[in-house]
Length: 347
Image (cartoon, rainbow, N blue to C red; front, side):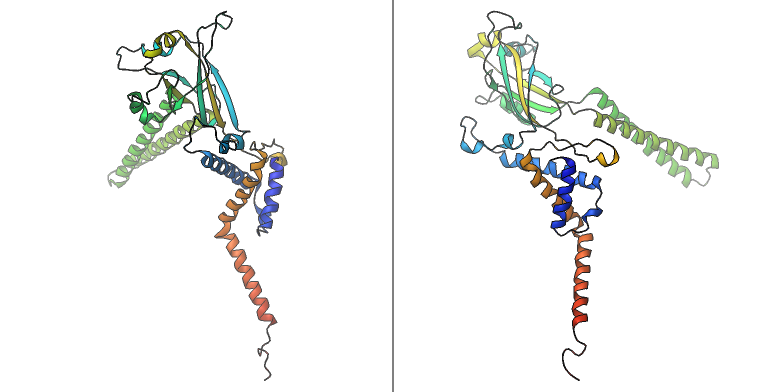
């Protein structure tokens, strides 16, 4: 369903719901409602299908999972590494044997992900794909844990990571440019507060001259302009750059398979994720290019119904209530006009 068809469906369904003045709504407002409804629909599907399950048993209720329901948003990316790192060499990079180093990479090559669903890793015994005796292992699942539990997992006897069952933590990558932009916002805000304090002191001092008052006012205005510019620069940077996540994989001790852990290199990491949905836009009526929704077909009608419900709720307390009151008043006036003056009795 195209965005133009969604707008027509939205208006028709809204009128069926009793909102006869829905034609007054702007196309931009319909786009905002649909985009909000798309996010709510995705969250509902994910929350409905996420739960505690046994990963070792494939049950019948897993056939209709969030991956199937959101198949048009479900993506798989395989990241190939040209590295000579092995699970053993990563551990031995550190000076102390009690300190463990992780294999680190980021999501720059993955895409604009909304949810990371699953990770798997594979090893091989060479760095040249044309080698004769090249061997690749099977895919091994990577356990994703919260960073706050990392220390507990690394020191746990049962849950500790291994070559076959490594663990991963995911966090937001803080780049140097973003740090400098945040610092600029903080510094300009401090300068603006100082300028406001100086301005208030100058204005409250009866001995201040006109030149001092003018200088304080100009300084405060300049500080405010600098602060707004710093905030705008930071917001523009965030909107123009895709959020980059950092992944750290820990392999733990592999004493029982030390020869394998020392001779097999990290080859690939397979990532499955749900990408961020398209933000729909209806622009063909003003000479622009439309942006259609990439939700699966079976979710588009429920999503539009939810968008209509959002609109109905938004006007429930104002426009819709006033229309209902006006209709009730008209009905009451009609009943009063049809009622005889003497209530049916002869004088």
